[in-house]
Length: 89
Image 1 (tube, rainbow, N blue to C red):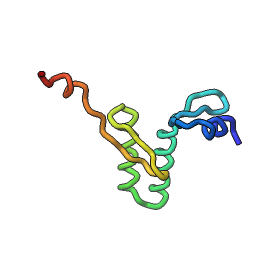
Image 2: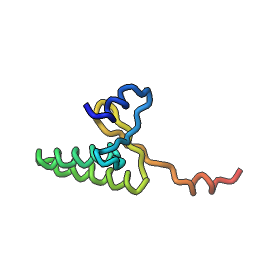
Image 3: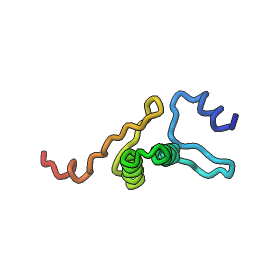
Image 4: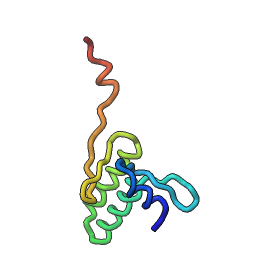
């Protein structure tokens, strides 16, 4: 078992980041969404694959937060800061 998995098992809070063998930071969400999209394509679920790819792009753009539950992604759209600041007291 790799060192990262051993450390993650001992932590109470698990983040979506890890390291590869070259100490490069990896984002689990990016890797998992890419894998999920490819799996849908292999099964000929092209619309589902496109939705996952759209979600990945929104995640990379910082527009959404992706949470994971039972191996499935749950997407939450981030609120725009401009909407918060435009409200007058």
